[in-house]
Amino acid sequence: MSDSPLIIPPRPTVLVSVQNLMREDDPDISAIAKQIKEDLALYTILLSAVNSPWMGLAQPATSVEQAIMLMGLDRVYTLIQAAAIRNSFAGNKIPESFWSTAIDVAGVCSSLANRYTGIDRNSAYCTGMLHNAGIAIMTDHHSDFGKFLKENSALDADEMCMKERDTFDTDHFLQGALMAKSWHLGEDVALAIRYQPLAEKILSGRKKMKETVSTQLAILTLAKSISSEFRRYWTISPTNENVISSTEAALDYLHINHTEFEEVKEDMLEGYFEKASA
Image 1 (cartoon, rainbow, N blue to C red):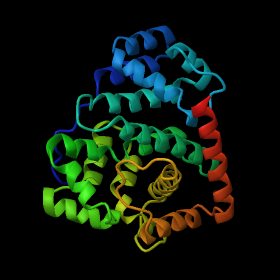
Image 2: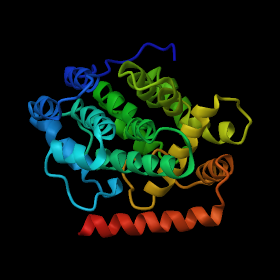
Image 3: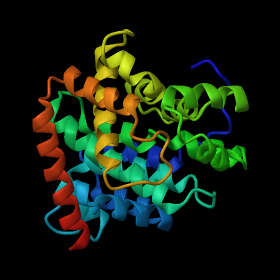
Image 4: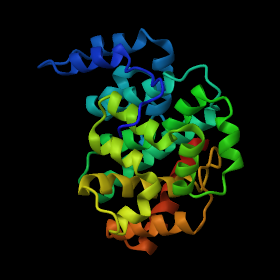
């Protein structure tokens, strides 16, 4: 990831302040909530993420304090990061559906990581939330990027990546990875985002990658597969052979029975729609 980044939104000071408060021996929940509430947009986005159907809360959280009680401080901090990511692109041309999809993919990543792997579910959530954030960065700097995506929607992710680099001298996968690195979300998160175009090669063993990165990438691949069942916005690649083979490679990499996954996917979607319509 040596390419020079575009102007990536800086990590908000509120994240640093909240993180410092969390490091205290006895974190003051009221002080943490006060920091968050000072940014009304961030606070609103956070509660929306907390109450996403994927979070599995039996009852909606109406405050930061309540969210912490129901979910725990570490998990809520992850959602604060996600809210800050969304908030950092306020005013750009990306539709709300783009961010709704990001939240959905992040939630599925967290759920699948908890179910099938030993990787931290909060880390998996960050990977899902930022997996396409590079699109927002590219759109901020190239007014024709949205049009470019639509005109090339038939390309698979690897072909799209190469065409972006030919056209813009960079690609959105790299920009998303650089943002993850800039926001200190961890090397595994950044690399999983960066190597999405090579998911099938990595997960099938044709390209070597650190196990924790490959696991993050496998979870992200499956989460995008589930998300594609009910979201059709800003699709980078259609359900073509490359997408199908990547999903199958992810299942094999995680030693998940294909039939079992279809059942899990149906259960997750059914639960999502029930909570979304409640």
